[in-house]
Amino acid sequence: MSLWQPVAPDIWQGRDDTREASNALRLFQTVQLSDSPHPSGEGIALIGFACDEGVRRNQGRTGAAQAPDLLRRALANMASHHGHARLIDMGNIHVEGESLEPAQQALSETVTACQQAGMRTLVFGGGHETAWAHGRGVLDAFPNERVVIINLDAHLDLRHASQATSGTPFRQLALYCAEQQREFHYACLGVSRAANTQTLWDEAARLNVTLVEDLDFQQQALPVLESILSHADRVYLTIDLDVMPAGEMPAVSAPAALGVPARDLLPVIERICRSGKLQAADLVELNPGFDRDGQGAKLAARLAWQIAHWWA
Picture 1 (spheres, helix red, strand yellow):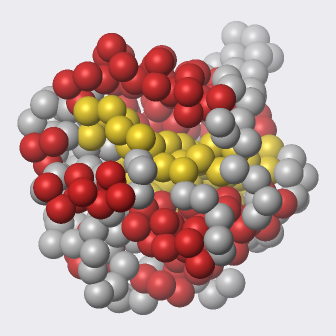
Picture 2: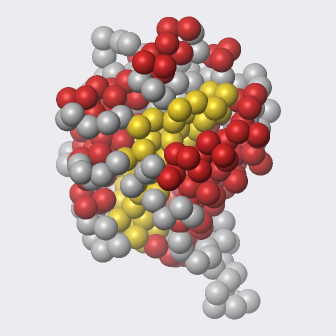
């Protein structure tokens, strides 16, 4: 895979506390680094999708291509508990110039191979164009099962466009399901009515998308989630970091004026992780160029840490 690059070993660095006790470990000491993009054994495959092109095409603020390694650095010094030792870093897929589609194909193929080998996949984007590739890889890995896509996001990302962007992934996945004559199961939780035009709401209604608005999240998200999970064989969770308020998450292309606080998101994420149905998760749209003292990167890394912890 010519677009694949292994992660540099110096990305995973941190404080060594093993003189205190043998189990005083941090992630940089337990993560396994792969020298190839091919799955080997069980575990959580960590894959970076270093991409700005989808955001650029969607007229957003670019910078997300730098996010995968920044998230790794933020994760490296966090404590390693039960489950974190199963994390296998399989490097990054890089988008070269405007060649988004070949990189998306490469990510899809890697995800399918990992899933079919018994691994789960944790992907660090990149913009939300990551979801078309990641979701397609999961769908291909489980062609005869009911795969439900859960998107924690202020945006529906169901845009019509002449080419793939960060705003089109779920419409692309809907079309892909239609081509395969399989049902499209998509839920967008935390969506902002102020951030989506009526055309997008109409498209969501046409596709029978399950919706929970940001204003209703605290009361409705968990009950709606229970219904979603009861009808799922497998779950793909995608977290657009702009679902959170700009005050908590400044480091995104499109900061949310209101948003859903991380404290409200975490019970939903935990329930999904502990359901036994979560096969794949990603965090997208982190834009380091707009961060404040690493605040956004630290919060995004904590979400990734929790997913790996609860997945165990």
